[in-house]
Length: 541
Picture (cartoon, one colour):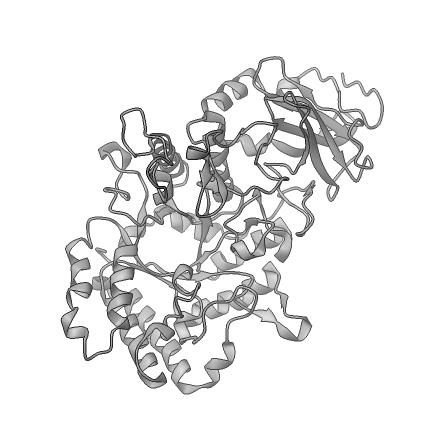
């Protein structure tokens, strides 16, 4: 029997509350970090209680004195819709608000137990958010009629290690824009058709997207995430992004997404100082503050935090049908002294610099992903000589499927930067990689990180005049496709763009009007065709 006190009151009684909120077993798994469907219960979800329609809210805030839902439906009043904390010390707050629906904006108003701290937070599990610079979450559903059954069935049967993998790395906000309309973004659905056609013409098997999770600072390229469960609203709705992936799959193109489980930004509406404490991070700045990115480091040793991140990975694979996750900044997770001087870090319990908590998190993350989603790939951006990154955990590895070959990238780019007169003195820089090419499941990369911050574009790195620069670009690409390892190329490199990548502008597509740049593009097309058709080039790499 459902009982409503007043139209905007959150306290509803239900005879089967375990179906409505969390069961005791849910809480047990949550505390262990082993509840892998949290995204179906946490956050805002539509719910019918008898004849009453509304939205159920759930939030983890163990150090809160009071939590309320504020939004456009109650005039952002902090007292109208209070949530109720469970009596099991889990720190879980729950409640139901009738008569609100899809499109309503909301935040959580949190009053901490400590120092009278009050703050308005967006939903950590929110499915959709306002367009930046606004920061509220939006009540939304994830209903979508998928049409990629053939792709998904085939993926489960495929051994990705013996198949060609040629990845086109893309930043959705700058791949192509509309200059005639104020240089505006394309939306997910517009990009889907243009990008799929282009990728098919140039022969790539997959695309890899820089992070699309909601991020307030566009200049972070998506790596400063505040909405882990929300595709950025800059380009459309969650259903628009689902359409994007669905269309790629129906065109025979896989989709990999960059994922950032290492750190989070200090924007007030995000995860930082969430309930008046360092809930998601570390209180000690020697462990909890990243000096390079001026961001906070996740506390992977806390079960609820590692569970949040593992759920996030599974969410994108489940609800958005992604084919892989490229894990950003793995090296920063492995070492406690990463980018720190003596005295700025805390050793582990054995006196070493290895981050045991993050290592255990990565192993568990990989195990859970491969158990639940066979056929997908987890890919590590790992820049050190840490052993067995792409080996199974049961033999001591980290459990990733593949690893970026940063050593090959650095050595090869340095070699090609020399004038051809001097290269004979540096042949070791392009032969050394063959010594370790099969020690990991490597991907050869020329990524976004190599075409920014005054490093120059791929073509711009080459010596000589313009003709020689493009000739050397073709030579570099030919060497890359003949070398053991899967392939990844950042957008613009495939036609020899001169200038560095600029995230505020479209690629220089006008260069394709010039035969020398069109020639580079055709060369990449032919290399992809050869790579995909010749088993010797992909079967054992």
